[in-house]
Amino acid sequence: MSITLLGIGSGDTRTLTLEAEQALLRAGCIIGAKRLLMQLPDSCTDNRVAATKPEAILQVLEENRNLDCVVAYSGDSGFYSGCRSLLPLLRGTQVTVLPGLSSVQLLAAALGRPWQDWVLVSAHGVDCDAVSAVMQGHPAFFLTGGTLGPAALCAQLTEAGLGNLSVTVGEDLGTSAEKITVTTAAEGAGSRFSALSVLLAEAAPGGPRRGPGWPDEWFVRGQVPMTKRMVRAAVLACLAPAPDAIVWDVGAGTGSVSVELAAMANRGKVFAVECRADACDLIEANRRKFAAWNLRVVCGKAPEALQDLPRPDAVFIGGTRGSMEEIVRTALSKNPAVRLCITAIALESLSSAMEVLQSCGIKPDITQVAVSQTKAAGHVHMLTAQNPIFIITGNCDD
Image (cartoon, rainbow, N blue to C red; front, side, top):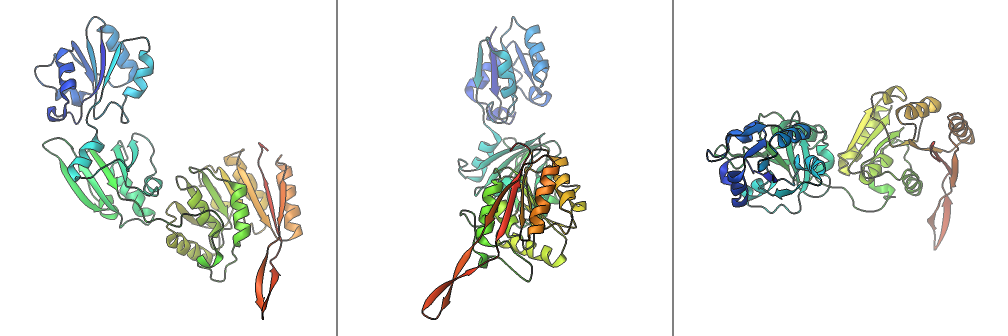
């Protein structure tokens, strides 16, 4: 018995490689999705069994152990294929893996574009964040399926403010019904596409590419308090979010911390929570100015506004309006290991933060940041001090 796992391309015989065609002709049993089996050449065996789950495929292989068997996958066997989960179950068995033409290759060829710099993402039966994918500085290719078709992915982009982003939908690639549609995310969100579709979204406009502590004058300010540059840099260092982190900024003010967090966690999501309407408008203005598409503005008072937010990896608390304990406990209820960072100017606020963290079983780590900046006075320069800031950090793992 020999087992061959092969990529069958689009399912149309025109996208079969010669090696794959020969393997199919030699096979005594062919296993795969019903759609693919129905499109096989008549010259292939009639012993075709529809099965896609690894356990079901193993059962069919056992029942046909005296035959040469082929397991056929759409596209390429190495590109988001079920081959990945089946191979570990076949250790100790003679297995040959043959590649096929993937949907990304077929779309790139149809467009006459190279694809080596595209961000490749699967939205086939799994959750997918289209916004973070297009924020990586390159076009993003989405293998779609299930509930996340091109229209749903375009709706994500449009909701984030990327409705004008250029997208391309490839339907039924490699078949006689192939169709290529170039449109915008907003138009794509309201369209219907074939179940066998893929999406290519161009790279989203990007913000600054530099380390933390952006100049204060970069931000739209208004009359809302803002965490100043040097303190902001220290806060970002304390939070140290991973690229795919979920972060809350509670009492976000102008959104300066939120925007820089969004740049650091550009494969994650940042939620700027603010109760003042004028501040929410400033956050939105800074969000768009710095292309922080993965930043969502949540207008409301904490802790009530936090209830429906996803589990955070890190939380910055810049303002509480007397609800510090409730905010901390809400964050901990979502994630007991969340990384917390609180800033305080008044000694009373420092004392309150320490008491709250200690009551939650967290040992607070306290840093004071005192910043002075030069100011011209005639022919000389003098230092002008800013208010000292306390930065209180901690989590249950410390």
